[in-house]
Length: 87
Image (tube, rainbow, N blue to C red):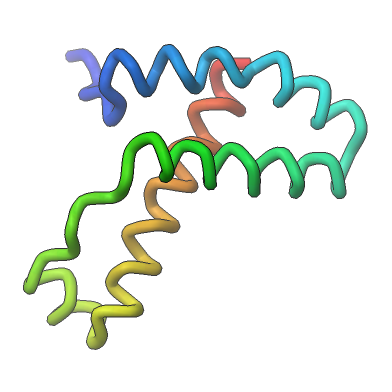
């Protein structure tokens, strides 16, 4: 059984284009990695804004702000895993 992709083809292509910068930042270490991730996450979210938070997500989280934070962190983690596992 194949795993369901969380990215669109365009998102996957864009993330793959970030791999060389990921490897370079990884070689430099901590501060470079933080800067790299901050930039990648920001650019990814600018290109593909996170969908509106649902009422169910707000109910589970307790507040709209926390639900948005949880959703954003989920997508950031997915980007991180994609780059780490694909590089």
